[in-house]
Length: 173
Image 1 (cartoon, one colour):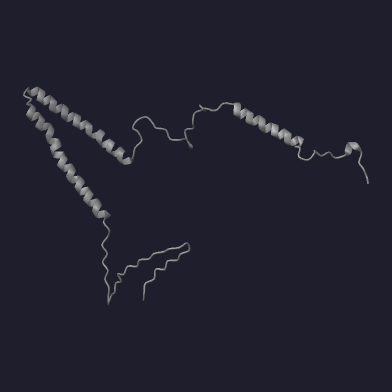
Image 2 (cartoon, rainbow, N blue to C red):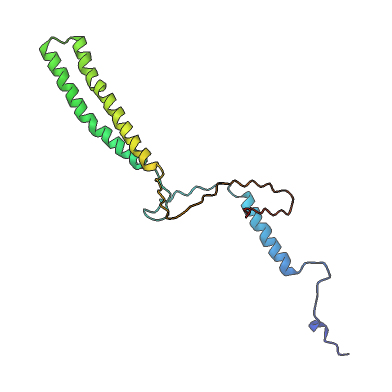
């Protein structure tokens, strides 16, 4: 049997013992865990977000975010407030200049637009709902047949039981 000189003999770690490389990697992992464990528990990034890209939405100054219909109604309300203010100012000026502002007459003048608007709005709403109902109604089907026709109106009731069950819905002939 040939034997190598002592300085060339292979060395092996005893069974069940880690190699020096495994010990070094374990020490690195333990150091990384310690650094994370003893480090800060939160972080705030104050760098400005990009102007374009996957930036999350942020409420902008001005009108709050809303649906298109709500935005349209809001615009109509803002636009209708200007003439209402102008008419109210003119009416106030006329009553003040005349010096004969009767509270009953002023009440009738102020209540007349509301008294006219309520039935008009109710009728418009009724017409709109009637149109929606007509659109939502199922279409009427007319079937025209040539020759004798037999319609089968039998009901079949089944009851299935068991773990491995098979339901057969067959019409009797």
